[in-house]
Amino acid sequence: MSSDNDLKAICSVTELAGKLGLSRSRFYQLQKTGVFPMPVYCIRTKRPFYPLGLQQKCLDIRKTGIGLNGQPVLFNTPRRTKSDNPRNQSNCGYEELADALRSLGLNVTRNRVKDAVDAMYPEGLAKHPVGDSIIRDLFRYLGQ
Image (cartoon, rainbow, N blue to C red; front, side, top):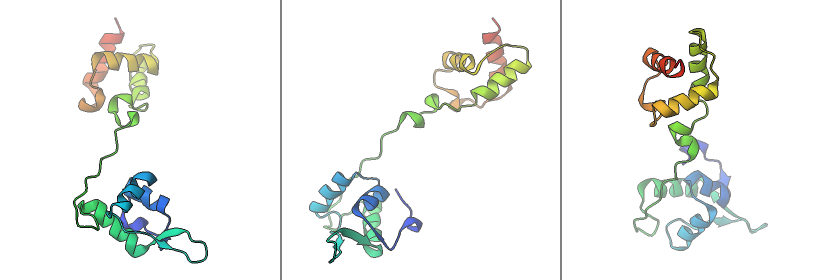
């Protein structure tokens, strides 16, 4: 969801839906049921847009969960993506760990270190602070 500082003087329906963290179709569904206000239309182009006041009202509705019609509305939170999962992050410091192990005399690659970490720490390194004990354990595991 967007902050109040990101608001422009006017924005399109697509921009507003994005600021609210909703798809355009879901935004239109909620608009038809009275949760969100209807847009203002340009007389010349007949395009819908939201001025600053209506944008703020929509953000308030999203924040409070009380629609324009006075009814409570529940918004789903976005799903976690694979990149949100600490185990699946490609830049988890494996290269730094490999460098540390190389300085101790092991001939290892980043991928070999990653495989070792996955085997030793199935929950990932997020719960374990990377330090001397992890390097020691990896050295013992990979040095066998």
